[in-house]
Figure 1 (cartoon, helix red, strand yellow):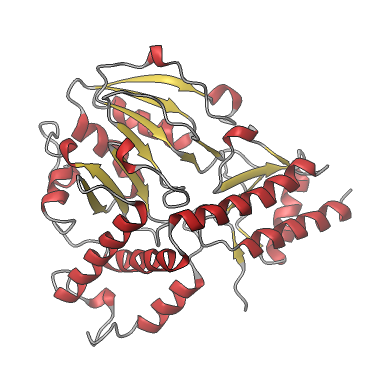
Figure 2 (figure 1 turned 135 degrees about the horizontal axis):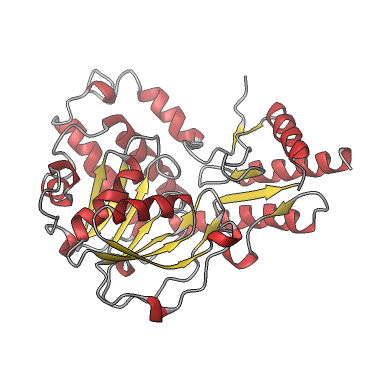
Length: 359
């Protein structure tokens, strides 16, 4: 069977060259005589792998020297608790509510302190990024949290809030390395691995050093950023194979020319699909134009039965995982870094054919 075009929101498609290299190295890695999955995480060969992964990531994102890079198990969802546990002093935080994942982060922070939701787009089914009124920001907040890209609803922040000296925290799970960002504008960037980084199993945390070492009393050892920073992500056995795969993805992205190059490709991919959705008589995008994601593109026909028919026929044609999130319905095309432009163009061609045949 040939490979399909996988539009899954995560775990998502991986670059074919990465999969082929991993396949080649699967049984025996280098001169180790064993697979990466069998290696001691304390061996020099594995230390080289994890250190190379960090070096590559630092280069791709131009991460300043005063930031630590941590590889932490538990995915982005564990960061919802780690952020307040490590940053709460006044036990107050500002949040922008832009979807399901920000809602979950808000609920976790409420367990440890007071949450001020400065803006929300919930009343419009999260179809836009809400306007922010700086007068509602709490100057005594320990952090200000945003979800940079909303996987389920297909929105993204194109302008950062002006938060002064309050650390800006961003969940970038579904957009990390898809476009150039200035890391120095953030206190913490975190992202689950299973979208633009590699297989599921860990999260990347990029944290400014001055935010480390202030965990609340009683914080479990494994939820303290200092534990991971002091031990270079090796306090316990890390998800060794997932980190190895991430290293291969970073190498692939570097070979392509880096984040600025993939950003241009991502913008072109998104433009191809959005342009068709805006002119189609059957399909329509669900997100306000100025807030549309480059990575996750939800769309509908307006007819549930027709949506189901489209998803079923698309799968038969080799376009899989287009069903929208269970909380939203409709369809969603996730076009992360590994999705080629040809895949998006092929999808649009299929959509045009479906539209003609189902008038």
